[in-house]
Image (cartoon, rainbow, N blue to C red):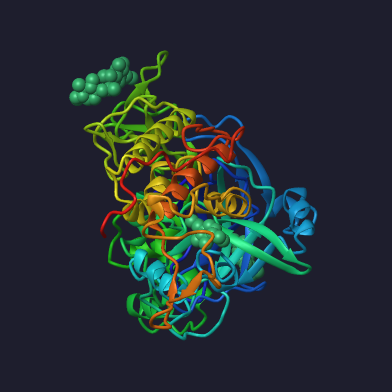
Length: 521
Ligand SMILES: *[C@@H]1O[C@H](CO)[C@@H](O)[C@H](O)[C@H]1NC(C)=O
Ligand SMILES: *[C@@H]1O[C@H](CO)[C@@H](O)[C@H](O)[C@H]1NC(C)=O
Ligand SMILES: *[C@@H]1O[C@H](CO)[C@@H](O)[C@H](O)[C@H]1NC(C)=O
Ligand SMILES: *[C@@H]1O[C@H](CO)[C@@H](O)[C@H](O)[C@H]1NC(C)=O
């Protein structure tokens, strides 16, 4: 799921040869609802090892859109700045504040290890989930005992929210061959826990994102983007060649294959030519002046980014320029989500409603929300109704307590993430969790939260058996879930009075009770 519009694309590579330098071009969009302090990129390829000598930033561009490049600006360019991030205020302002280098090397554990979500007791399993979620793409790359070498770079800077960035990173490819070159990305928030210690949190989806290679790159590098041994290929195609330095072998191979168009004269040609992916999809020279109606495919529009690209309009349609009749953008219904980078440009409904039921997993029906505010209002009324169901005993307290927060995160994914929930919950738990019920309220029949008499650390001792049991009170938990949802919406600037009222935070929340008190269980 795309949380907060966070996305990453792999645009171009300059080399797939093992042990050679490779300039990777990635395009990312930052979360719409928070300015991250850092952007984390990991080379999730076995044997990847990044250090000062083997990883550097070549360029950084900020802003602009897919179809409108106005506002795009260069933040950093190795060529014109002499290669140092030291004098660039974009990096230094934040890096100095956080007492970090603008570009730090490390393993994914250095960052994920302090994230509340991953640092819970079953963190290990969660890491495995992460790996699984990325199709064994080895994120992080080292739990299999391949050594602790750094495979990530963390770039600290004045990143903006909801903004598109294009970066070129110069890295050294690992020395193993036939390994898929995978780049993984996550935007990161920082918090100071004490002097010299920073806590990191992955924003957007906790799984981060594998940077999706664009088609032009797959055309040149192959579907798997696997590394190869340049010297072995050179020997096999030239015979008798005695070069042993990967960079020299690659240089010779490039000379040999330079004039080849796709797919090339043999199976090595396209891979060697992967550096031409940097020139763009339409490298045959198509720009806006030579663009025709048939340059891009069905329902695709032309974007001038990265040497010219065709972008799938998805659930929208191609918009033809009024003056020239050329396919220069996509148009989406205002009820549709749209991507800041890559396709499909127009996506699912902002608030997916299916048959009158809001369901996180329903993308095919329709809804009328056209903004985050509308979505928040729909989320609010949806949960207000569910809250009514709980008070009327039409919904199970257990299922509310167990599942509703996860569903809520899914429904509200465009304007908040799990860390917003954590942050709100901290305030909520310390200031607003309360129980107005009397000790003999029928709703406490099955539980005694939160003020259990004679409880210790949330546990009590069964006076008959002497066993210690955890306090359980599903109804209390369920009511708190609804109040917390209301509080999170409130903290994000979308008040939801039905669930939480800032002017009356301790308003009675448990409804009235008509059930008999002495009811057999
Ligand atoms: C990449 O970095 C290496 C090592 O610093 C350097 O030799 C090489 O010229 C760099 N390549 C580019 C394209 O910046
Ligand atoms: C491209 O196709 C659209 C829709 O069919 C049409 O309106 C437009 O005039 C065409 N433009 C050119 C340059 O052929
Ligand atoms: C949703 O779709 C149904 C059937 O396609 C239609 O009857 C209804 O008017 C649509 N509602 C909205 C809000 O667009
Ligand atoms: C909210 O905070 C309480 C108290 O720290 C904790 O027990 C609970 O698990 C938290 N809930 C969420 C959803 O983080």
